[in-house]
Image 1: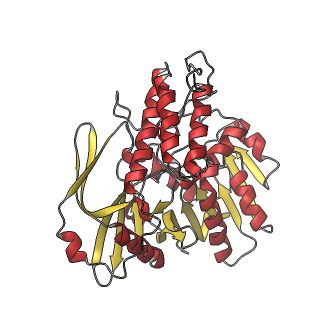
Image 2: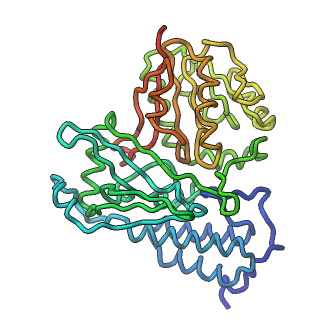
Image 3: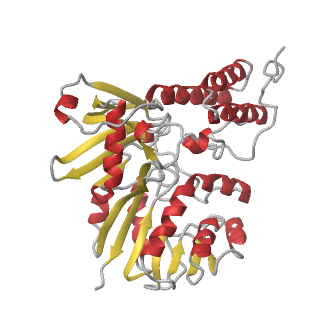
Length: 402
């Protein structure tokens, strides 16, 4: 009898203190979670066969329906990665023959609203030669997940592997989102991603479909009172933002001032601001969070922290140079609440100051909505670079001087 056969995973095997849906979903039984971690070790070595074998056997001996569904979900994501990943020996195209792409037969991809519709990527690219083009992609297993650094299958980084083709049409049915596209070849995906990295000022990533609860058709969001999590879990959630933190520090340094006042209206345990402060020691960093436990963890990490709802900022009007928003995202808030949350904080920004919007999960707005905010100007929509081999949502808007 194998090790897997003697692990009878049941509802009585022990559960973590919190269970989340969507991209944050995980195994509830501790033994199941351990086997998933073993599978991740195999994924880190690109041993997909062993990873799938571990998950399949665990599913066969698992009696908890939630965990059975979760294991099948992970297996499906591994299969998608195998189908879409670019072979290591593939070389980038020198040029893109767009007429050839447009002549290819259409393909269709669908996702039920209770699965991962937020994994669909729409990329808008402007160029002098081709005008405005729209590409479609689909999120795949994150390198951070494959290396067991995060428990969520996806992260914010969009890579060449995830590109599918030129967008032809998108349709919504009662239960699913459907996208039609003209497919790219692997070598074309590599070239197109390189072009986008070289011209990020003309690129925007959007995620048009939120995840909906199957029973109510409402967006999946965190509780109104916030997640009741400990610091270890908060650190796990923030591990997926490592690239975003690096890019955020580069952005702060690009502003040319060492004495910036920086505000995070939903600072969690304060690690993000602490990281920024380490790179900008002469700045003044202010946090605020709805959860008193998170405020307690933050207190000794930054210059100032407040407990309260971000709709009521606890800082003075026009006193902040930069505000970071890491929570206007899928599975955190509802889409309808994003602009009110953003504008509530806008009053505390100095004229000429900035608001920066990004996150581990998809941002629930687009540059079109930001362009409609009176008194603000959109500076950029994406970040990224060659060292990360991809791009991600990173909106920066600047407040008018008068």
